[in-house]
Length: 431
Image (cartoon, rainbow, N blue to C red):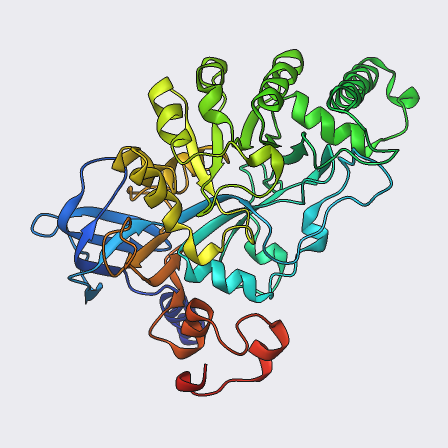
């Protein structure tokens, strides 16, 4: 090997080594892994964006050359997973039709909007961003990791096959009942949904059976509905009232859909039916139940009643209905109403990840999973606890000690405006 070639090899090796940061060991914190008992004083080792080791302080190996950081007195919880968010000024379908499955929310999300950094300030590391609920079907959702990035592609989660990960947003109840072409009644709403799914079934059969040269013209809307019928795409279904919940379960049975129920204000009334169907629920826990008529039956006890019936549950913000910075409070409210502590914490993390088909990647502190976690000042169910740091795939994306990040946690000029936050700083005392 010539000296020139040898020099190039050494340079390439050095460049690769520089590009790979040393492992990081966080030691002394109380760990809440979610897949086992809490660890009073533990060690969490991150290497290459994933969790390399996790366990008690005195028995967990730390790789040679690792950066060791003492975080004694803090609590480390898996990154929070929000299964229902509207951050990024997202938009979905328009008023031309009540069912618009070809619409993709990824084409309307502003990832530089301050709402993203406020979500990071709340400890949220993964989100399902959805269009609104003013349609029977308002478009395709997208699952994002809240990495530090400036484009939707940098934040998007992809499946093993390389496709963008996401579900389909549907709704029933009062929101979608409007003047034509929208339905005026609950019965008409269900009828329209049936018609479109039947059309999607027929389209799939024609595409499969037809000669390649005589296939029907490509239909993006029916293709997307076909992904729901095949189970490839989860239906995230807004529903509040007990009878509306049962309608969703009925449609799910008719078409074999994979469904996650969202909001389910009346879940406590039909918990046995939800559990028997094996359908998970994503609940919203608001401080002051009430407001819209179909949500008047909302109770904090729904989570406990669902769990006792054997149902799977998680929580969501519906941001801005619940501010992303206050997401931990959802678990606290449910625990106050009798939900077991372990179930409440899993509902913010592991169970939520599973409802997005991401349970193998995130939601718990386990070796091999993405290093998504939150450093807290105290117990996650305490009103006085603050998110100190948020990490996504081994990189810190929020640090309360940094005045620029602290702004999004506590508010002030620039916290709500993308333009102010990009151009105007100021002393922390002025914020």
